[in-house]
Amino acid sequence: MTFPMPGFCPAAIVAPATQGAVVNEIVTADSASFTFTSLTAGMTADAYPIIGVMARSGSPFDFTSVTLGGQPCTELYKQFNGTTALAFFSAPRGVAGNLIVAANATMVRGAACLTPVFNLKSAITPTGVAINLSDPMTATISCEAGGWIGGLAYNGSTSDSMTWTNLTEKFDVRPESVSVFSGASDVFATAQTNRSVTANPLNAGSGQIMILLSLR
Image 1: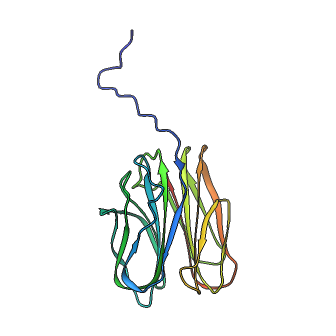
Image 2: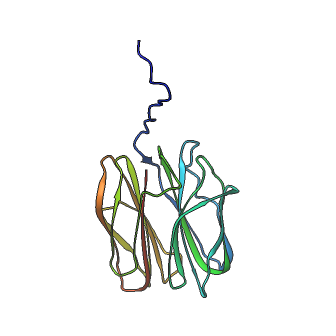
Image 3: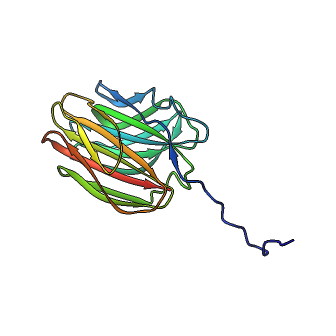
C-alpha cells in the first residue's frame, strides 16, 4: 500500500466543458432598467450561467448593476462602440430567475442571452478575450483543452443578419428594426491556438462590435 507524500494533494481532474441550449430574449421598450424573464428556462443546479448583454442608448452610458435571480453577476468583459455596448457576465453556478440589467441612462432597446456551461474550472476568469469593431468582424482567440469559446456580435443596419465562421451560431435577433444581435459558441476537446473567428453582417451598417471570450 502506498500513501501520498505529506503535504501533497493531487490536482482535481475537471471534465471537459459542455454547454446546454442557448436562450435569448429582447426588450422593446426604452428604460434605464431591463428585466429578462425567460433566460434561465434551461438552467440546472450544476451549470454556470454565462450571460451576454447588448444595449444601446442615445447618450453615453454604462451598466450600474446586473443581477440574475437576485445574485450579483461578474462582468467578464465589456466593449463599447459609440453608445452601443456588448458585454459578457457570469453568475454563480445553478442560479436561476430574472436577469435585471440597470444603467445610468435610458437604454433604447436591449437584448440578452444565457448559455448554461458545465465543468468549468472558473466562470469568472476568462482564459482569452478578443474584439473587433470593423466589418466584417474577425479576431483570433485561444482556449485550453476542454474549454469553451463564446462570441457576441452587433451591427446597426436595417433587415440585417449575421454569418459566423469557425464558431457555431446560436441565435440571430433584431432588438429593433435597425440592428442585429447575434451569438455563437462551441466547446473544444483539444486546445485552440489563435483560432480565427468571423462575424459577417449581411448589410453595411455602423457601430459594429464583436467580442470573443474563452473559459476553462
